[in-house]
Length: 444
Image (cartoon, rainbow, N blue to C red; front, side, top):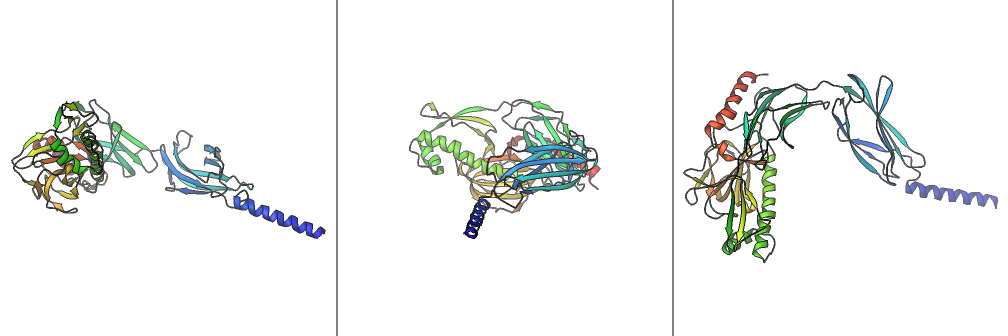
């Protein structure tokens, strides 16, 4: 009888143990750490992205230390976990100076523990090189002045340890590129100044090295405020039925609601595609050598950054306002359209309110857009020369009257084409400083 009782107790204990093991209360596996990129350096702005994972029963605590000269410095202690949390991601920013870490070697230690009865714990340790020397950054050329809706150019030299660099215009960040000349430490880019900003914003060039150390230089420049046109456009029933309704993916009976939907929602989807394409730079070296070509024998009818309201049967359509983000050029019906400069075709196709369109990349973040075309005579991936015929004008999309919508975009943002059509502007703002820098720093 006693033996049977003992056996029963053993079975009960085994069943309980199995149950608790299944639930994770008893667990023999410690939490794991996964890094987005394992750290190698520590500086004044190092960012370490990692995740802690424990499939069962969950995470209990995460601690991170720096160890140098037998001194432990705690930089993270996290014990606030809801029951059963199996993973958590961290973006840990470390300023070595703040913690009194000196140049040389340092050990980065992670201690993670789960919430099982056994309190499984694991320690991860990494030796890092401490680098507190910021990268060098010398401005070689920058714009003396810039307008809202304008384009600026900047060229600069950095040390070879730079892993990220660019220019910040207000709160917007744009990339700058090396390999624009033979010397890999020379960077440059075209950058936009938003047309919708009416006040002067800071323009800062920055460089970040492999340890996260950062150097920044603010550019001194004159800001020219341009007051763009505001207009009211009358909308007719014929326009709504023949131009607007075919562009809608919704069956909206009310003409006012239909126009508002197409001119706001459909327009945004179309422009999101344009912005995404023109934010992806694949050509670092500038291919433009002079001013952009204007549609042959054309007149400019619609201005850049015109702020347009729309009126239907005597009443303004509220919530349907839109900026016109290019120049409308009109010549003869089905006029041949030429590539404004050398470049590579990165898009061809129908773009909603923009109709049949072509986008060409010209290097250093500069793109041109050609819209409302009848025909497209090039394909994505084609390399075109200045003056190559790429299509014919028409009224496809949300257009009245045969014309070309010509846009210039710099790193995903529309800028005023008038500058790019000006031979003297491109010469003084870009070509002269570029040639000088190429002559001085073209070698290694």
